[in-house]
Image (cartoon, rainbow, N blue to C red; front, top):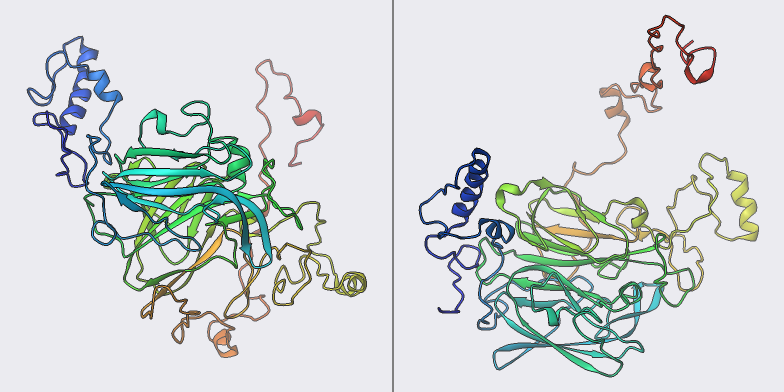
Length: 511
């Protein structure tokens, strides 16, 4: 029997053998269940769908993957431009390769890295090839890849190819599928890519420490024969979380709950590079999450999108629906697609409110509602730049040039076109323009057409719409809607005795 893969299916996967179809197997399973209830022998949807004696249970336990080829025989190395549109990695890069005897050869170097999260915040992290996170590895379904990993850390390490279907001995779990890579050693991993999708890689030795220090990356495998339209802009984003105390020189991988630096491609706003798109282009967002503990609901303003893939494969069209926020669980990826038909500057961020802040701390007194007009002036004699929460919020933390401790940045803030953008952390901007000089050059801030930007309402507009500037004309919440619900009295007891008072008191809540 020939081992050559057949890629004549729409998605590039091998087409089932003649006489055995996915529909036939599923139909057989449904009918077999009904026949079992009747005590009859299984009936099949199509004669000859399954050969006599075939284990139907095994068929159901091992469904065909829609994104997997059936043969491990490598194909001709896929080429960028011809076989796929290369991904765009904001604040990052894609690892180059060479082809040796038909095999794509990559080289990763695990090492300590001096990394900048944003101007003013640096830390000694662990990464690959001089950066955090590691470079994106990009290949094509059917490629044979050989990845050399050199360890320049002071500790042993491994690399696990997260979600990749491969032989057990190449899985990269220290002690289980291989011995660890010692300092100064170089290991070789080699396998044929049997699937496509947005996958990841990371250390699988002392994961809490090594992943917590930044040893993670994305592994993008493009389909050999795409079923749909190629995207014009294919963005790759990796989410992560860190604990970096103010003034500290290194992340603290021992943290379990209080992460205070939340990143996209290892940067925090205002250090995140925008996603630049020309109006009308088809956009793909690949989002991976290798945070230690937190799932991240990633929300895009101005658009709805469709989640088309997980790290397990392509989602059938019948199973997709529109979203504006996609939850990316720890250890997972999600791929979303949309057409950029709405020009503007659009926020893209985690919707956990503390995840769009930088180096947030605890044990702060709640000063909301305090009249601090005199307090602030007195406090600034001892603490120049002091500002009480609830007066100006956190606006001005960057514009005022407030002093911050060494190796730290304000909790929020980046200069926007109108005011300070009071966000930080896991936040970036999608910039969609009708005309672009280059995808690689920031087009500046969006200028809305006249009449399409919110601004102070004129006195004439207020009068014409019956709006009082002091807010007195606005409807107020009905009194009944603001009251807590009161339960009715308890039912009488069956023995005729008085009902027991609620809570042991002599009167009901509503009396």
